[in-house]
Length: 106
Image 1 (tube, rainbow, N blue to C red):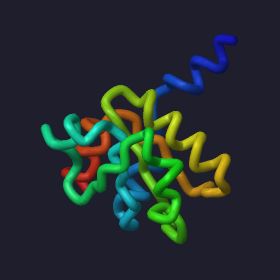
Image 2 (image 1 turned 30 degrees about the vertical axis):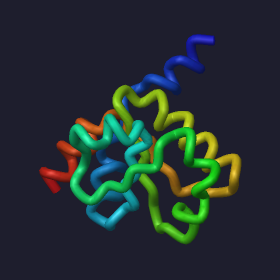
Image 3 (image 1 turned 90 degrees about the vertical axis):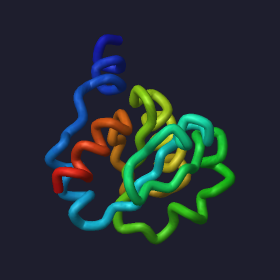
Image 4 (image 1 turned 180 degrees about the vertical axis):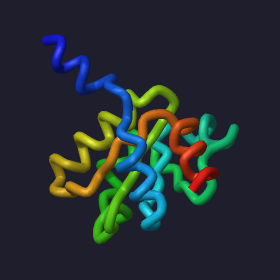
């Protein structure tokens, strides 16, 4: 049981994230539009968690995808949805602040 929580809430691998950002990953903020409007990562698009399933075409043919949110919970759910739909090149970036710091320091 602990392993499940460890996988859900473990620290994000920033090395993998940094590489994906440098290579131009598709940055997706899965928070609500209201949250997104208060600030996000430069270059990110807003596809809220409840819209991920209906907007799969936006994820197709991307070399790598980084999903992120406020805490890492919704991005984890988004990653699972995308992987179940056959999109495997998804990284859970965790919080938008984490991804933002990496984008600004690349």
